[in-house]
Amino acid sequence: MRSIWNGAISFGLVSIPIKLVNATENHSISFRQIHLEDGGRIRYRKVCELEDREVTTDEIGKAYQDADGTIIPITDDDLARLPIHTAKTIEIVAFVPAERIDPLQMDTAYYLSANGVPAAKPYTLLREALKRSNKVAIAKFALRGRERLGMLRVVDDVIAMHGMLWPDEIREPEGVAPDSGVTVRDQELDLADALMDTLGEVDLEELHDDYREAVEDLIATKASGGEAPSVPAGEKSGGKVLDLMAALEKSVRAAKESRGEGAGEETPAGEDAEVTHLTERKRPARKTASRKSAGTAPKDVGGKKSTSTAKKTAAKKTTSAKSTSSKSTAAKKTAEKKATAAKKTASKKTAGTTAKKAAKKTTPRKRASA
Image 1 (cartoon, rainbow, N blue to C red):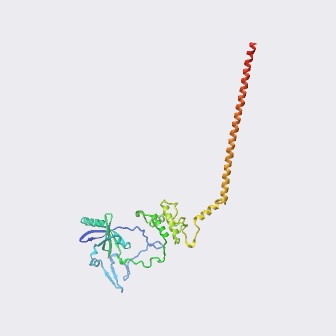
Image 2: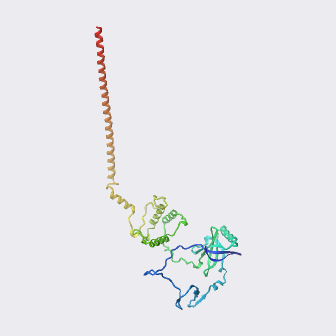
Image 3: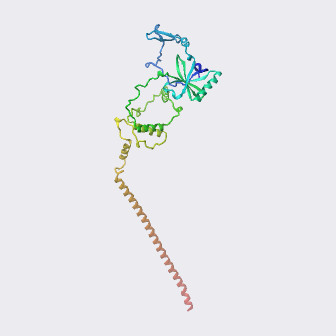
């Protein structure tokens, strides 16, 4: 990475040669200004008002305009000779706990790189001292024509520096807070806590710029001759929700469903909530659903008539089943009686035939003896 500033960290009597490198980069998409009539590029030219001609960069310098309009030229050499120690030095003035720093003061971030082999030892010493103390270093440095405030901390194995705003550059939040007469109920706080717990934490590495991606897709689509995408007609941006409790309940339920947990559980209020404007109150979703189902079902569904009808139907089915069972039993008994009678008749015939045969055999014997 290319350094933007070379100097040293002043740590008491220790001096650490370092190079300043940008720790962040801007991924925003840049647009050009064009002439709508013919698409021509619009440019800003630097023109000298006295000579009425365009000038080059080498011809441009700095100056301060006094209150009476007087122009006072200031050169780079004038700034370099200023009697301050921070012109080429990051001067550490104190070590404080990190929680003492107001996030409102945080500005651009930089990485501090050891400049040369001799700087490795003191650089490592400062880094390890910051790690062990769990503190950050407050420093002063000069960059781009003015002195700034900075905070040094350790990121992995690198010392990072955050540019900071001076305390008098932070505005007082007067008139920004809402009316002090607004009160919040405990039930609303409970729902807010439930929503915070449900949303939980997030891996910051997974967050990305959806707007930039949408703009990139738009550019690619138009470059290929396609039409620019638009928001579907049915989708509208959320307005001012006045029903706070309903909004919280719906948010908790939606967060749980997105995580796949407790999708069927009730909200803390014990019933489904519909987010609506107080001036445009709608009927609850459950009533609408029940009316729709009532329109397609028979009229006596859910009433006493339907209960008695169901009982009668069940009774008829039971009676029918019993009669069918008794008929089959009677048929079995009749069949058994017929089979028994047939057996008796067959046995009688067999006995008669046997007696006749025996009589025939005994008759000749009697005649022979006579």
